[in-house]
Length: 404
Image 1: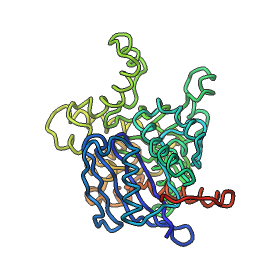
Image 2: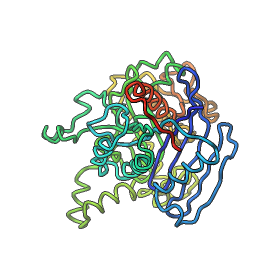
Image 3: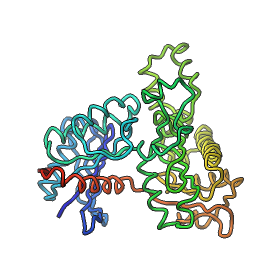
Image 4: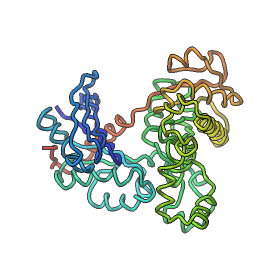
């Protein structure tokens, strides 16, 4: 049986999913797992398609010091114990820069180009590339595909793409990219079956999680996003500030004496909900907390979503539907209720019972714009891209290697 391995690597974890390739290019999820606590408290956990446990193993700290080692352990487990040898590996890569507007087969040249964007996505890019390098070194003929969070937004027009800076910087790649593109692409592809009446119309999608952004869709394409050059912009996130006056950065450097690397670390790790609340970067903990600063952080999060909805509605010149997705958007009925209240001026009205049930449609029947909750599936999107590229490349290069 042919399978595809999907990898999403972070600084201290490697998430993986295995999809079997069925007839006519269909994909079926077989395994979902992750190696957490890399370099601290390593643990491999995995389950089958029905939720049945397949692995739950702790390792000594020294046994899993980095992502490359974690990938080796995961590969050995898949190959030796489950007899799974993928025909290809698909990777989430956060930043594709100006070079890539669609998924691409990986070689050493691609990796070298992607290394140029490490400073634009320091929380993600270096860790996305680590398992790619490991597989290239150990299985050089095994096809790997990079799927970019920026690619879906490359359909933006010039007005949405530019900053008001000299054109030379734009030519060098300083532009508004947008992120969470794999999630938005999945929602755009799913809406025709979920809500065919609005799938090609003016839709705002709110991807609300530890990383958070919003996207304006028209005719199933991205026309505007809250994120820009890096994944720092737009909505406040777990540890990132969202929209910020550049003067704040200048102040941190000139008045606080912070170096560029210290500012980068501060903005990516110490701001957002964590910085504002002083309690946690986890919305679940903030919702349980009685600390007034936790309440402020939640209020701010909802307020900025409301402001961004107005901006995106202006870009669309109207609004026909609103969609919640990702961890907070799919699971927090309280946040959804408060956001829909912010959208009242656009014609949104909540059905509290349907919202509490986490129903697909949570807006009031017969009201204004419909409001949906649509679970995202970035891993399936990656698997689909990987299978498609693999099929198109086989005729050009018949050699292939499995993870064995």
